Length: 190
Image (tube, rainbow, N blue to C red; front, side, top):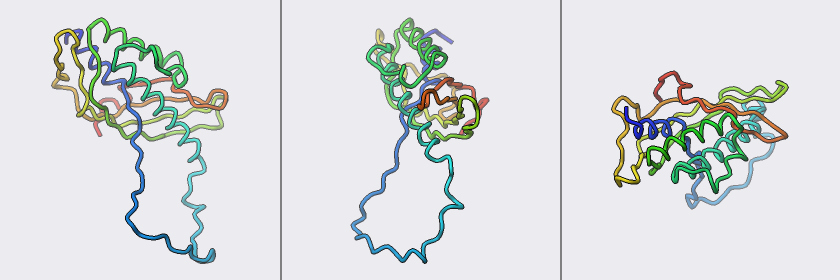
């Protein structure tokens, strides 16, 4: 595998893009009056007591991924807010990718799809910790050779969809991505 392919693949494997939100559309129907309280089911059995923390973890992960994509588009972290969302370990992984990309003369183009979810959350730990699982979709992702002005195709053995994991910890009231493991799914596709 050439250095350019390795740099492109490395960026593809560690890169995660912002979560795509699902918004409700207006179908033209007018809201109806709420039914009496007695006829409403009690949602307490189906509500996740950790939903707010899980949403906060995903928001931090999404923000980090957005800043990561900004850096990969120019092979440089300058002008990004990566340090607001990623700790030294995760930043080191990203900076290593950026150095490889710069050396190979590549940048990222296109988009990276994903479906991230919090798979574990330990709020009782001394430092609250969360594990995320992300189904990464490379079908719209490209590694671009700046000097040759051409797209470098992904290696043929690279699955277009695969599972990766990340870890986040809550520091001073906010969630920070501490580790990105592109092999977290142990080769699992999604």
